[in-house]
Image: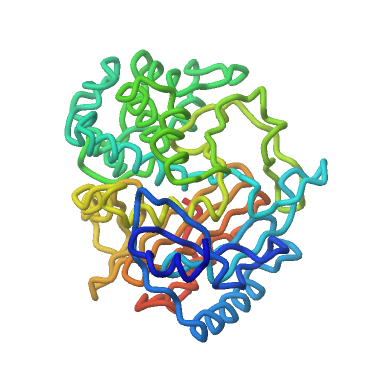
Length: 394
């Protein structure tokens, strides 16, 4: 189908610009492909001069802040669903000479929480989950009646992080691989306790999302990986995205490295999913992010719940919605994002909703450069950052 025909039916389809033939940079604004017919969103096509100007700006930004000779991962910036610039460098599995390309999935760490949250919210839309029901409604052995599904999503449950309480004496044998069900069983049978009373304050905690994965399984009667594939990955054409839930296949996936390319071993926490363990690409994550603009994919009501803040106990700009971090400015502007860090994997997904801009950076070789995404926001909109300090990994 010719591009001109695509443009005439833009209101029916969702697009993004593809990379050039070398697999490096999205330089041809007319090289477009269908994203997701079912979840149509209409974005104006970028003007040619604007596109070239922005591509040059972002490319210079990337070369300044990321250094492709050292960065191992993928970087992508899009506006109105069109990729302005993308770049891929480094190794997915250095020992095998397996290079990172636009199609190579790498571990997205806590950016996984965004996808888990959207899956839960879609199940709320379908009437299979209720946000303010007790977690016990879905997981009967869970010990805290006051804790709701919403509190897991916005990190107000007061739960302790499983990565920490498994260090407590007598709680877990680290020679054994921990699973999501084990996390629930430990909460139900061990004196784990709470860090705060449910609903009283924000406390970022991976345990919340490990439990949400179990709730997804209960609501769908499918394993988390199958539910995510059926509800999100497959409908959106995310062909290079999957849940890693089998340590026996650890040599088949992209590896994780220290900043000197010393490979990091998988460990006993690497089977817990929901909070992490999704492997994806910047292009696939762009498809996901763009779909969140569609009311057919996620209802207006659920988006309103997702993109609002819930924690105002202390003054400040930082807040958290349902599966997404945010900075709320006095002007009313919101900077929405999620960062991640697991082993040597670091990740960042920024969604500038007012400007229809997506900024994504993923790396499998430990670096803080991934979080430089924040520095691009003021170029596209009114984000009053001073850049005296960087946003942390999580």
